[in-house]
Length: 177
Image 1 (tube, rainbow, N blue to C red):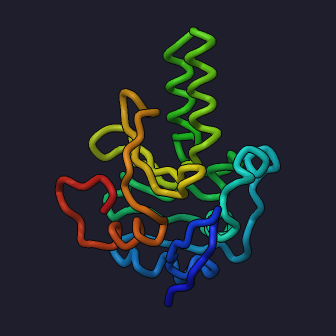
Image 2: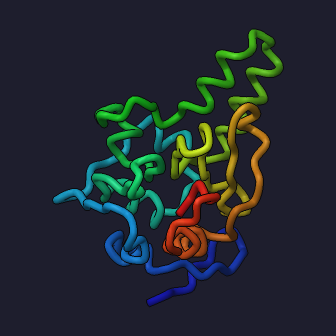
């Protein structure tokens, strides 16, 4: 089931993200657990990412875990964002690593500005540290990896499209399947 969603004067087709179980059903090779009831994101995260569409926030707030079969790639959940997950990685791990790598105030400002406009959705440690994020303005899904996390590349035009890519059987060269 799909539905059209008008976002920032652009028409996108999303898989039915109004129901997390529907959105995640395509990830049949992944381990997926929904929370018994949604948990709200911390106010600081909501304020920083107020531009993220409600359907994506609802998805993040409704999921306990979504993990690839090899446990090297996962969806960031409300518990990651709120600091209550058991993950060794924080939801903003890539931003923290980049900030730790420089003392230059201008570089630090650019890094923070980049992350203000990129909502991290997935993390991966397969083939090095990497992320998928929702990009402000376009709502595209972009990928970044080490060593320059802020050099993001287009991966998909929507979260629905990205989930469809991730639903394909795992390829040895893919970080996201």
